[in-house]
Length: 301
Image (cartoon, rainbow, N blue to C red; front, side):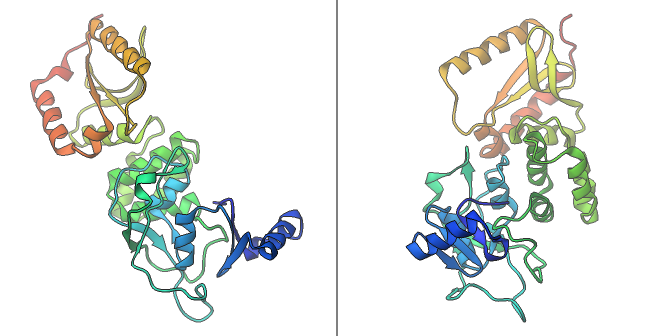
């Protein structure tokens, strides 16, 4: 994945861009970090990792690729080439143990995380050489690392987000899954193309684990598309946003809920916070609804 302001020296070709970088180096608006030419304005959190001789992967690289990323903030996921003959880290590299997590919201760094430092989590096995010359590895490699590192549900969120945002097709995703070890290959065989958000993926995977019939992105005549239909008549709408939308959106949602209720559906709205930060309490309440059997009732004709 190319990043504006960061160029590998092997990726340079004679032409306008090479002349631009030469002028920037001469003028002091760009500098070298190991094999990289870094211009002023390049993402500081990414440049910090490159200075350590590592590149982001898994959750951190997935965020740079524009995927919906679950809020797991335990480490910064990186990988590096095996240090040995023919491998050289940037001059002056000091072994570091922490870094700023590379997370984005609408393409911009998350301001409240810019002062937060997390331990580095190295993905293995270490490569003998960098795959390619991009500062952020390909989405295929990022998802492969994620599938081997994360719980299956969180890896599924990344895969289904990549499909929903048209970064890859379901067929491409299944090719990546086919090359995984047995356990993640078996569980990630459940990834689908119709998830509307990471929150929806999380709730759907939970329903499937309970062996409860669940359908995604179902069109209800006269109302429109809903996130999940559990059983016959339980609709779960999943909010993928950390913060609430406008008052107009709030009113539209309630109007939809009333229209669904008149058609015999039971509607539950789950927030991002309930699904990812308060899941234990949320799960207990969802189980109560299942035990009561509301989802088994047929909606009104």
